Structures are given as C-alpha cells and as structure tokens.
Length: 413
Ligand SMILES: Cc1ncc(COP(=O)(O)O)c(C=O)c1O
Image 1: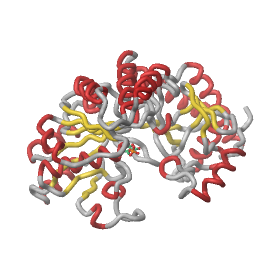
Image 2 (image 1 turned 90 degrees about the horizontal axis):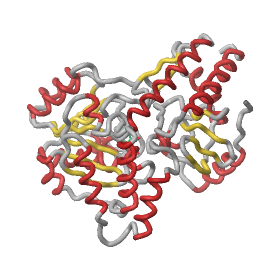
Image 3 (image 1 turned 135 degrees about the vertical axis):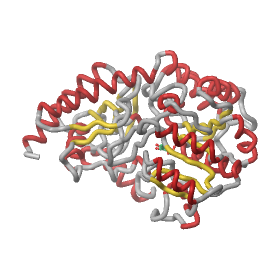
C-alpha cells in the first residue's frame, strides 16, 4: 500500500485561495483534516461507496459527503428520476406536481407529521422551524443543546463567531445534552417565555463522543413541552432516514411537533424539508419564507426515488448491519495492535476515537494514514455509511486500518 499524492488538489487549492474566501469554506474546509498532507481537497467523481479525487486516487468513502450520500454515488434510479424531471424543466414559474406528491409521500412515511415544507439546506428548515415556533407561541426564547449544530444562521452559530451579534442569539438558551433538570429549571425561570426546544435525536457533536438519550429523557422533554405549550423541534438533518424511515423520533420513541430533514432525503440532490403536526399548519403558513430554487422539481423527484428505494431495501437496517461489522472489525484490529478504539453513536454513523489520547493527535494520525491508503476517515466528525458499502469495502478497509495501526506502532506512538 503506497500513500497517495495530491499535486492537482494542492494546485487547485492555491488557485482557490486567491479567489474564494478560505479557498474551501465551511464543513469541507481542510482545517480539521489533520495532517492535511494525507487528505485530498478536490473530488473528480463518485460511484457507489467510493469517490475518486482529482489526482486519480480512489477512496472508500466513510463521510458520504457529510451525510447526503445514502444509496451510493451516481445511483441509477435516483439519477434517472431527477433527469426525467429536469428534462421537463426543473425551475419554472410555478411549482410542479411532484411537490405535492413528495409532501403526500412524506406525510404517509414520517410518523405523526401532517405537512411538509421544502427548502434547500438544513439551516433553512431549522431556522424556519424556530420562526414557526415563535409565530405559534408569541414567545421569544429557544432552548438548545451546548455543542448542538443546527446550521450557520447567527442564532445557531452563537456569540463569539465572526459576524454574529448579541441580538442574534440573545434568546437562545443552551443547556447540556441529557440534562432534563436544566430544561425544567429554565422553564421555571422563564414562565410563558419559551417558544421551542430544539435538539438532534441524539447528541452528535464534533471532537467528542456521541451520546444517545438517557432512558426516559425524550419522553420527559416531550411531556414538559406539551404541558407548557413549548414547540418540540427535532433536528433530524443528520440522522433522518438513517435510523428509521418513519423518523428518528420513532427510533427513540417520542413525538415531536416539528421535524427537520435534509442530508439523506435525496441522495445528494439539494432539498430539505420541515415537517409538522397539523396544529402548527396555520402558523407555518403565516411565516413568509422562500428561496429562488426551493421549488426546483428535479430534487423533489430525486427525493421520492431515494425514499422509495431506501424503504424497499430497508436502508436503515442494511446500514446498521454494515456499520456494526465495520465498528467491530476496526475495534478488533485496534486491539490486536494494543490500541483501544472507542465507538459511540449509531453504528451506521459512528464517532470513533482512540482512547488514552486526550490531544487526539494519535487518532488524527491514524485517520490520516487510513485516508492516505484509501479509507476516507476524518478524526473530528462522526462518519457515515451508506447502503452501497459492501463486503469488499469492509475487507479493504480493515486491511488498511491494520496497516495504519502497524505504522503507528512502528513510529512508537
Ligand atoms: C444536525 C444538523 N443540523 C443542521 C445542519 C445544517 O445543515 P446545512 O449545512 O444543510 O444547512 C447540519 C449540517 O451538518 C446538521 O448536521
């Protein structure tokens, strides 16, 4: 196994740095890819579970475009459905019938939800959800989780980030994940002032172990929200359709008022959705919210095809089975070299970390080595598997991981 080289990636980045802020910004920024010399910066193509970078290196992809890829890149059924719709005209002066079909499909699919609203990105719908909650309750405050990510709008980035004002997030109250008592105290401290509680179905921060809800946590949160007229928003943007086709709230056994979807909904085509209970339909309708491309019909056709295929093959079960084998295999490989690899979160979107490595330098080194030999691992973020990952991928990945641990040991790390 020889390490990949990245001449073309680097040359593109140098050009980009002169004409694009950051060169590559946001979640694709190379900043957390450590050491950067092990990572490609630009991709050329993707097929199934793998992508090829601009230097011709092939990677088994465990980031899946940070979540949108769920059935495999260049999926024939999804691409055909999108292309058929696109040919008719995807951006016309009125919505296409597929918008109604998709809303009806989602209302049938997702448990407890009566309507669907479409936008492009996750941030669009988390922000809309907060606006709907405020419109419905006439209240200002929103309770969120420390380390929880809901997009790039100033209210969710928080104070301390460039360009964010105190006023933008003055009514956002952050508490620790799984701390029901902290939520109850805020409700008591701000009577009749809390519009919404927003959180992902389980806690998946960066650079830290992911955490499932404690037994009874969601049920207690739901009960208090219902008692106090607080809108319960689930940000299912990362987990949605990966844990359960009916929504991750079904996986964890509770009933929210609003659910935000994006990422896996259309296998990479740009679309997000806010779904809600019937009681919030009129308030949702009152909030003015739109975007130039939000009615594009090709991504809607792609979403219908993606969801139908995920349902047909029982995607969440397939991903769980592969994820379990992957995590078990990696942990055993680590152990055979004397390392302890801790896995947290759902096995189909696991966060891994080498323990006894508080600076995370060892883990970064190992992820970088694996990437430089063809298994694309990041060290700061949870990974994703797709339904396209197969036994060959697993065998190849475990061989690469084995070699990388061997190299770590040789370096006496
Ligand atoms: C849980 C969660 N919420 C919201 C978002 C924001 O989505 P987007 O980047 O599409 O705006 C993300 C993106 O990673 C996410 O993981």
